[in-house]
Image: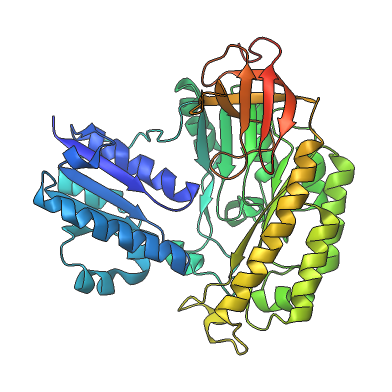
Amino acid sequence: MRNFSIISLGCPKNLTDSENFFSIFKQAGYNFTDNVNIAEILLINTCGFIRDAQEESINTILEHILLKNNKLKKLIVTGCLVKRFQEELKQEIPEVDLWLDLKDFDGLQKLLNTHFKIEREILTLPHYAYLRVSDGCNNRCSYCAIPDIRGELHSISIENLLEEAKILALKGVKELIVNAQDTSNYGKDLHGKSMLVELLTKLDNLKLFKWIRLLYLHPAHLTKEMVFEFSKIKSLLPYFDIPLQHINDNILKNMNRKITKQETLSLLNFIRETIPQAAIRTTFITGFPGETKKDYIELKNFIQEFRFTRLGVFSYSQEKGTPAYNFNNQVNKQTAQNRKDRLMAIQQKISEEIMSSFIDQELEVIIDRKANEESFLYEGRSYLDAPEIDGTIFITHGNAKPGDIVTVQITDSWEYDLVGKIINNVTNT
């Protein structure tokens, strides 16, 4: 059989596209290999969100062009970078055989002469998968190019999502990870209001998934009523991924985030009051145009006072085509980077303290894999940890296999990770 390989860069939403491309190759009779050196066709699905991601995508393309002197016959490049810069890329990297537009599944089917219905494959570990409930975004944050790349909000019907979820369950998925550019707004384009609670309730009613995890909740569209309803959904993990981006009111206004500091605090405090064990993850941007030292200190103090369970910081990336690209008072890149580094150092200490508070507690843990280090048997995650984003729980004692959900007693902690031992049998059989 002819061999193909896929390199998927960027976010889980991009990975879903890669899984559909994967399916097309399989339907055309190609055999997947993760060894690109023996692949006849290589598809690179790029990210073009910020400059660092763009550079990673371009470097990946250039690195694999060298393989074309070997077995590789076709190099195909697609994804967000291609959507943004296709004409420039064609001129600069003529060695690429085919530039596929974003989500151009028909184009790949035509190339491979296959026309079957796409049945998405899973490229994650087999026990978890992403359910992308919508694509595109209507928020128009001033720093973000996503609406220009992926278009306006386009939600998938609840009926279709339930069918997709059932298929994923048949494949062995136990943790369903619901995501979108803005999950809080799911269904608003179809029904004039968010349908996220309705969707999650129906997914829970299927009783097919031990865990349902929710990503990318825009704070301006996440209401207290939604949070309260979340608390009643049995399989929904108490994990809130809410990208706040800043806390200063002027910066928030210039970012077009449509939320104030006071509204943010009210929402976050309500989550902690309603679901005390909730893990709250967020991200912030340093160096946004006009961010003064005073604005930065306000953000720093907020981070120190609120003590997020998980937190990431990005320095501002000036992206062509976005309103903020032309804003006055652009912040020096090194200043933005220094601010980012200081915030991450603060969060490291906070995380270390939070992690230590779990010692002697019991947590449900999904086993991801056998451990790479001899000191441990397995690596897994609790409700605190989204895959590829957050921490790991290292297991020292007990018997399990990947995909099992077991009860673990925490015996030690590090800055972002936990150590524990299995204390009972599998809970998902």
